[in-house]
Amino acid sequence: MSSWIKSLAREVEKQTPKPKFKTLFKQSENLKSLPENQIITIIGTKLNNFADLLGLNSFGSDGRLIQRLQPISKKEIQAIMIICPPSNVCSDVKCQGHAILQHSDPNQIATTTLIKCSEIFKDVVILSGKCSSCQTHYFADHENYHQVTGPQRQVYLNNAKYLKVGKSLHVDWLFSNAVVNGTYSFHASVSAYAEFWTNSYGKQGSLKIERRQIWQAFVHETVRTIAQASGVMFETNDNPSLDDLTHDAFAILGEGGAMRLSDKHTCSECTQECKAVADFLPAANDAAAVLGVDENQAVPQLAAAAAEEQQNLAESDDLMDVDIENQPAMVNMVVMDGIIMGPTHCAFDNCTRPLTNAHRKAESFCQTHEREFRNCCRVRDCQNDKVEGTQACHEHRNDWHQYRQSRTKPSLAGV
Image (cartoon, rainbow, N blue to C red):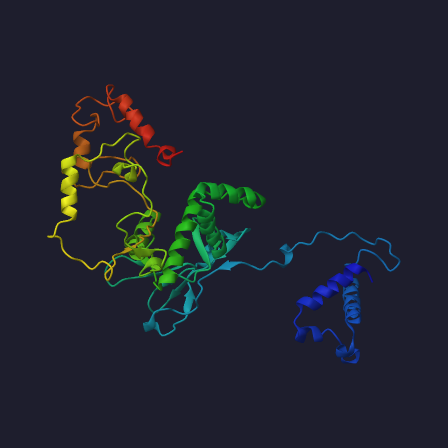
């Protein structure tokens, strides 16, 4: 018996539970009284005989090569994949556990491509169900139900194992969770993650995943995770666009931008007593230097009269007596959600109407003032026509380019 078989026998003993391992021995072999080496020898002998029975031995008893074994393939024993609703009974209390009937047309059953972690399965059957009592439709990742009045509603399942992220593409929760973790851990864009996954796994299965599909996986997974952690069954109108889904999810689950983990949180690091004076002050008698806005210029000291007035105010008897030691003011650190954007109202004086488009075109005016100053230079009190491709006229073109240069990402980041 070769050492290869003995190594396999040791792993069989190590990874097989004791009750099942005992079934590999006859009562006459008396397993309890056998030493470890003899147990390995007996198991190795059984494995070798089993390999002979299946015709898996490459060498004969004389040590000569009999056959070359083919590479092991799991394709022949692969499970048949079918995507169906996770429950087989209706979730409506009024239906009292009514069974869900298959709703898919047997002659027109839809198929999809399924990604499980990094494995690709093509032509996977998709089945849906329907409760004959309340007429609710059940799918792998959501449910649809009719309201008494109003549009049909869609409920997203927190326990969904598979998510639809494209017209003919489904992914499991391991894939969608990897998208979220990769985006946060590596600060990766959806385009970068799509390219990474396609180059690493997609080419083997002739599948190119798109940026929009990664973005859908990110949105659906984050919505499902937050809804599950909040104990909420998130629902929207039936078949919403991705923008509408994101808007509704933030309105229902966003909690106004506040972070649930930081709600009512306090500790010695993020909550401290207010300090009237900073721990460190520069040696130079330069008040503006503390703020960092002096632009390396000398700041004149207070005039004698002004300095005397400040001293009198500090020593005035009219000031309110406050017991600061007994009532210390506490300062709490505020955690933001990372969303940063500029003003969303019109830049025209005293106009508070919303911008025409605050995100894509970076517009500065509302719809009314956009029509009024459509072709005008954006510099205040300038009536000249702006140059195409800029927001300024020929006279102020250099000012516009200088302004744009000072607002680029490297400039704002201090690079």
